[in-house]
Amino acid sequence: MSSLAPGWYPDPADRSVQRWWDGEGWLGDPIPATAVPPQGPPKGAVLAAPPRVQEKPPVAPTPVQPWPAPRPGTIPGYATPAPSQPVGQLHYMEAHPRPHGLMLASPGSRFAARMVDVVVVLVLAALANVWFAVEFWRAMQPVFSWAVAYGTNRDLPVPASAERANEMLIAMTVVLAAVWFAYEVPATSNSGQTLGKRLFGIRVVGLGPEEGLGFGQSFRRWFRLGWPTAFWAACFGLTALFQIFDCLFIVIDQRMHLALHDRVALTAVVQVPRAGRPETQRTAPPAGGPHADPR
Figure 1 (cartoon, rainbow, N blue to C red):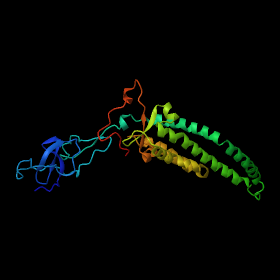
Figure 2: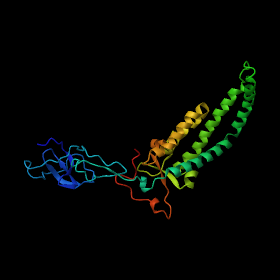
Figure 3: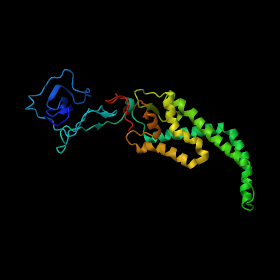
Figure 4: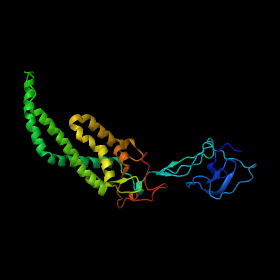
């Protein structure tokens, strides 16, 4: 009797198939090595191996019990082990990820598209903040005069308008966040593209079974990156650093170029197929599903 637990293992006699080992012998018919086996032994299995007294158990010190389904974005199977490796050890071979069969956008095109969007949002926010900016300037003029006179007379009280100026500054940052939301969330929800992404031929897709993004997924993607904007007036340096690191994470994630807001919303940015560029054309989804593993 073997000490190896029952389960599906590569057949040591034919590595192109896998079979059920019941602890003493092989049961049932073999299935391809790349197939995801069922839970438990095959139905109606009969002893398919030679008599158990002659059966040679597989040499597999690292059994997979149960055999895991292939991770999305991977090719199920195993490479030929080196002589020093035990027979039967599994080696997943990573495929180049193509969410929904589309080529990932390069970090350069993503940064360029984001810069275009930043400029557009700032221009729109400046127009929306005209009244708040005028009120802020009026409230700050007494503060400027107080700051100049404070060097010679430190008994001067802070002007009451300073509080008004602070309120206008907070209002402007909230309006900026609202304009950014109105610019990005509906656009990515409907087409996966903002103006910047259209100019550089890229778009956002989901990593789940559905390629398109709904409003909720689009909002989660924006919110992870955009919510600190409303707090710029209180702590600009820390919140801006948080947003910059979020975007720079696409360089750290060299496999799929996912920013932190992509990981939260389970999205990726892909290249829109272009005529004359075969590498951008859609391909068949990899084994394991149409989406890629965000890990």
